[in-house]
Image 1 (tube, helix red, strand yellow):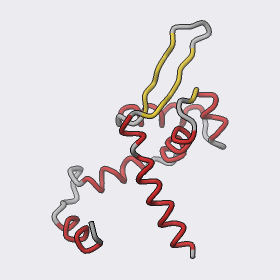
Image 2: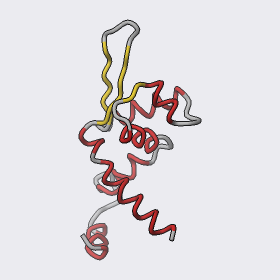
Image 3: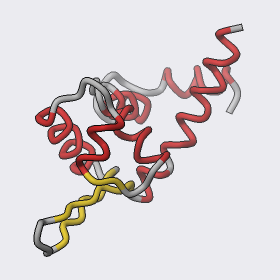
Image 4: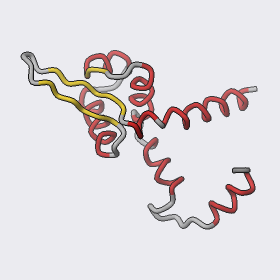
Amino acid sequence: MTYEEFKKYIKTMDNSSNCPVKRTFEIFQGKWSTSVLFVLIRNNPQRFGSLKKEIPNITNTMLTSTLRELEAQGLVNRIQYNEIPPRVEYSLTEAGQSIYKILEVMAEWAHEYKK
């Protein structure tokens, strides 16, 4: 889709939650969402402690909240193993894995913009 085609497409969208662009931005609006997704794209699956080590300055509460939100959005799977001690792993769903395409385009744009 060209820029002009995209502009026409966006003009047909309203400002409600039905707009696919707005829904996409809502996924990334959380302060820690992109950090969690980035770590899971690089190293999938991850345990809570490993995620915490990979994301500096995030609190346990915020990491838990972010993981629950991403799970509710269908981007992250939570698998709890019935072991002693209990083990929980987080991984990307198929939808979560497809986000790399968006991040790849954003990285390309950032690289070009930086020039």
